[in-house]
Length: 339
View 1 (spheres, helix red, strand yellow):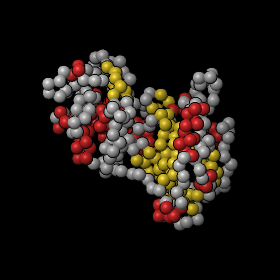
View 2: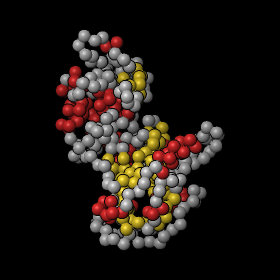
View 3: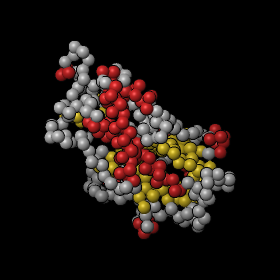
View 4: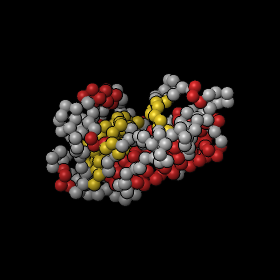
């Protein structure tokens, strides 16, 4: 799924629409009361880790966010065939080496996603943001994305051999004539954004001391890095890349590593995530050092394994045994550790 830099980019893509009024709502989502967004104003846009939050309020209430909504005629929702002439701007997501626009959910995946959405209810207006705003939380799937003023197009045939464009989960048309399109995401109403800047690797308020304490636990370091309580927005790509940059084996226990090594790892986590965001905003791709590679930059053979807590989710790891030697507990043979 999109990692912190991608979701932050999504937030920046939605930001220009803050202050505008929703003129029409479309999409395949069966989340209840999404149609109620019509005639509401987009009041705020926030990103936290892997989640995007949008706030909506009554269009007639005084808007205090700064600036004023752009006046303009209400336009009909653009068709899939006719929107390309709008002079579109878009940001696409490259997740784990593939483009988001090539993916289309299967009927089974659509069914599961719709079931998840319909199980959630919209909060009463009196319960949301002090009785004024209603918040939507967006959690993106593996190839989730947002586009502004254009729709995603299929660039290859699906498993059935059909060239079908991805189906939008939600389309928000605004009174200015612009629109936002959301793909492959779960949409839930919430009473307020669950923003934890102390754990967000892209936040200026990221708490290094808290993160460092988490890294020093007697746990495989690759498990800790994916724990969103301490590293919100850090995903599998970032995990693999920064472990290689810090020369740390993914299964090394944090409590056995030197403090200087953990501080180096933390520096790489923040710097890599920030650089990745800047590359995305500049429309540049990301060059992997170890992720999905057969050899490391020094020419050594790369190993691959699936690691995760016994009762948790397992994720793929790539590492170089020569550049990233395993630090094992005293008296244990590194080869005996489970992978």
